[in-house]
Length: 258
Length: 172
Image 1 (cartoon, each protein chain N blue to C red):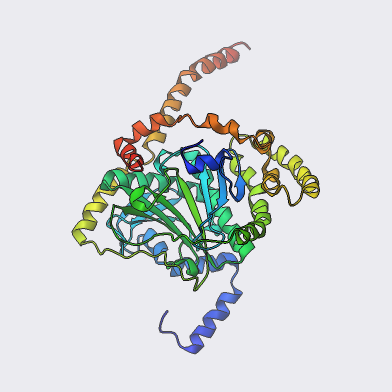
Image 2 (cartoon, each protein chain N blue to C red):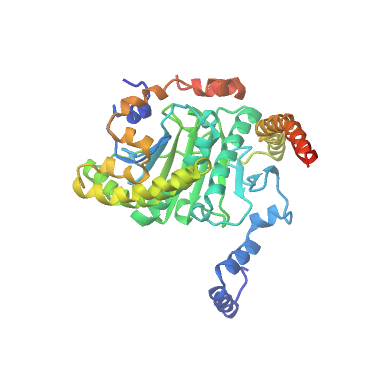
């Protein structure tokens, strides 16, 4: 690949332009090191595999045990992935993080995704990094904090809100579909109607409410009525039994905050 | 008053630039962002670390994170996004409430979110690999148990059905 002359490159570009999206993906797959690893054509230290996901150790790890978790199918970035694959990888990431805490006896993990070159993505195959962390490991990876003018924050909020509504208002229903498919799709249609009406009246004042409307079903109306106090009842930790099952190491890690 | 800053946001005790909210998660703009537009997405329920969050909520929060990341691409026209979970104090987590950071990125934004490889030895890597494989083999074992139980209960009921079926067949 690297040693192409001008002519070959032009030829390749021409070929790529003519490809259908399916052909292009197939072509990318052939060029992808990680697809080759998963196809058994290159060696790797495999940690986990199931129908949709594959996890190996990074060959240039931040710390020993640094895991790369990938979809088996070739996707370049997260937005290309089907919802079910995104959700599945999230669940596997959680379990691999637990495996890191228990297996390597470290005090934390960083789960890291880069979408795009500008975000530091190196491979052409989408992946999640699960990095074992210990106090004072000095690998860097600190998210800096900067002071921002309140007006700028509000302006950027307004710039984002409409798109976020569009993306999450409708699609969120699909997330919940698993259990109540028919019910949800019905409410979705009704809600779309409401969306068009309500914002007209209180457009700018009620930004925080407005965005919730497209998602709304009966339950959420309660939350939207500005009585968030009701959620205090969520506080009692029902997850206690889970903690115990997961072993004491989790409590230790959670307790480090104190 | 909530002790936890994020629970305070959920309960409306602290002001926030709220972007999205549903029954299990909420997304707000970070007030001190690395890059303007950085989003904090967290569960409404208080869980200190990811391992304590139920699977269905994890699946949901990842798909919301993905859509918020798409939202950053499309509304701010950024060239990339990072999705980062700091899990545990050792990973830089400062608030004991599980959260996902979604950071808009552009070339030359002056941010360095890369890590410095520590170059562990081959032995260290082999040991880590063996330890991880052993733990990772446990993944899914909980679900398998549930499936087995379901199968068992199913087995109990069918004989009744079969019995009735046989009766029906005999009637004519």
